[in-house]
Length: 389
Image (cartoon, rainbow, N blue to C red; front, side):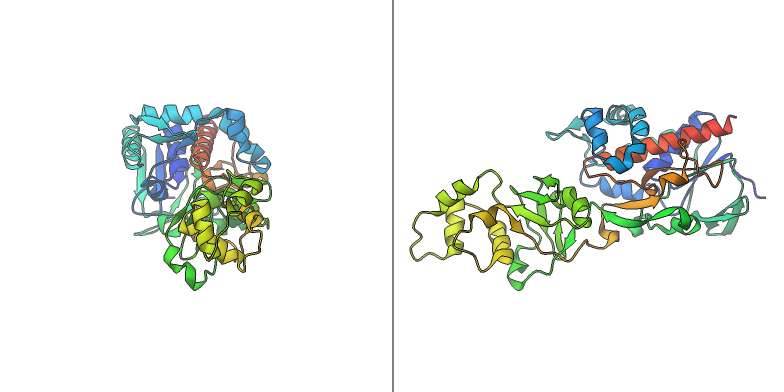
């Protein structure tokens, strides 16, 4: 058997790095195996336009965002919730600010300074990161790692799997890890994703434009976020907030004027329009953007005589979720019944799991990163306790 680390962490995303830190803090020699040439690629990509670390809100409200199917996450998140995430980032020398909706960001508005500080701290703790090391499953008691020099057989005393989900494969989250655990995995589905729409030619000039000041409704989920009309369909924070209900079959409707009632709309549209087209009449009477106008025409032509109800409840026809690799995150993964409370695999004592590879999902708004950090810490501490027996 080759020279093996005491503790092996598979994956250098937020969950894996947090697990490695917990193990090293307990005095263990830790090696991280990262399949890509550099750590935390998806984390760094997410932080290019503002890294939303967490959400500053009451812990019970925070927990409710994960839904009833992630109730098992609640004890983990109570141990490392929004306050602890903020303290952790500040401890790495990153000043934070809280936006008007409670979302928490580094003042630098990107992930790279935080990641540099974190990697420096891990290096100071003796954590080794081996790049281009890809986990290939097990052979008996050995952990198989594919490296540029060939397959290595390692026998760590504890292993933490933090392999990510199944979106943005080019950044490392390709879901390939599921093969050795297939009988314990819920199939992946896209989460926080856009939806495909076959736009008519008249929409082409609007593609790439944001649509603001609307409300989206799907089943019991609602959103006041904005959307973007992309070449492939509808994307953006507004659609992500209702995407879980839509994935389950709920119909999407838009309220193009959420601050006005049907009666107020009728009043504004009741003035004589003379020879004006209905399109011009709507634009002038409601003072709305070309994109709202285009959406109404795309999904409601021919317009009825009383268009106000359609402005409030505009049904959107779509062709289903965009491909999983374009999703912000994924649902599905390693099932809860495959793990004990320590996040250890029941089928493989001494092997723990954390992060997005577990079967849970979260909306955008800082919930995903928070739970990855929290489960990584929990799995790392559990692995350290296992080693200390």
